[in-house]
Length: 194
Length: 391
Image (cartoon, rainbow over all chains, first blue to last red; front, side, top):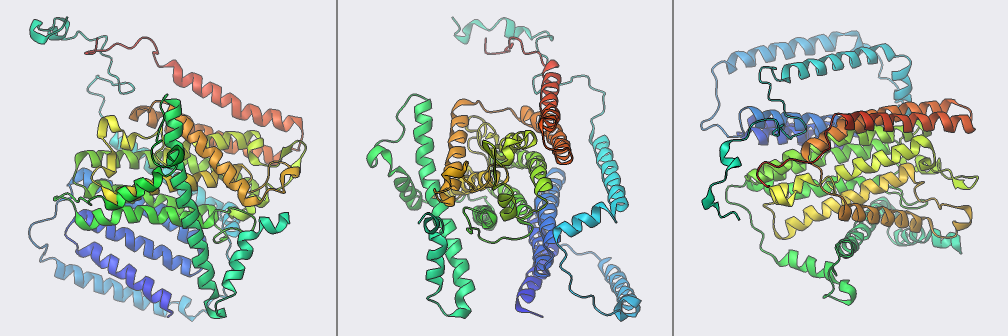
């Protein structure tokens, strides 16, 4: 384990712990962003430039913003008064340990662990692009279709019900067609006009 | 002679690095490059503030700064000292830690993005294989810093400004990246050095810059519009609209932290202009073969100053957009045009060189521009505006 990896790992884990334990939700989101950046640094340290930069572009640039907006638009960023503790945590811990144990057992006993470590390949961005466009073009298209469907679904959920017909066009409501209140047509004489 | 002048900074660096023991050389070399980037672009920032105030003054029929030094040239120094000596106010309700970190978190990615800009022959911080992707990745990190500044100030105008800035940056990031994808498609590389090298030749009476092709011209215009929006420049300076939300996300910053925001904004503008030069304007290449005796780094900075001048010019002459106009422009106009431009670039790649290629690609770029513009304007009643209260 090299020193840069140790630093990156410590930073990522510390940020992840902070993201779980801080009281203010926005602070949690910012700590999570640091963890994302730490993961990106780990990818870069493994010479996976494309994955590392894509991780920053997508997670730090977009997902973190999404989380922050969701926090602000739903509950507000106020910190809870008392410490958060729930009795169901015990069972949660039990389930988590069981799942981790099962997965670890499965991984150590799988054929993947018996396989010799792959030789170091120089996967350039060009090669990744070629592979995505030739060998893996079908999975790419399927993911694209899935994301498009998700996007359309989100738009439909967010779309306002067409109950109110006060349609505002270009930020300028069609005021010239409505009848203005009389106070505008006849300003009070004490207003100091003329 | 011309060759050594071209490489003078590279040779200087090698000479300086030669003084330290071998083990330290990579570290010292990196430190020298970083110091050069910071010094040069911070100086350019100081000159630009003066140039901008003078230029705006000229456009608005006034003098601009003319008291400190000859022609007010020492005004940036005076402003710097003023920013340093001012009291650093932090609102009582502010989130102290995030409020403190925000300007740093904004400036850091902006400075990082200079690492991949080739400012001259052999003059690039690091030539990484995914250079353009690196630039956009660190650029995307600035959005969260803007949010940190706006949210931690506990000021509704600051939060409004941050929300506007994020909405704007997220929307314009897509046309920005899509318009530069055309160049990446043509070069077949994400490395900024390779992109500059691909534009090195001189065919006919025009250099082989990508801006002199139909798709490259459209890409360059779209890229610079998106770049202006991305760096919050006028006419896209809604996040800091003085008349509505005072100064936007940095309203609660004073003294040197405010100066840091100012610096980060201008450095971001230089960086993205530098990327525009690299992608479309041939990087440090001279515009004609008989002009190559001028050093390559001089060409980069000449082009950069020219783009800065255009930005100042636009700021002095264009009114600020409204929020809905901003969003409509990004999603209904720029995004379709960039997508069609991708097709135009692909057609250009697969057609044999000659006049038909120019005609087809030119039509692919010009026709959507007119059709889309016509269609978007049709639904608007651009008649006399009726005011409710102001009459």
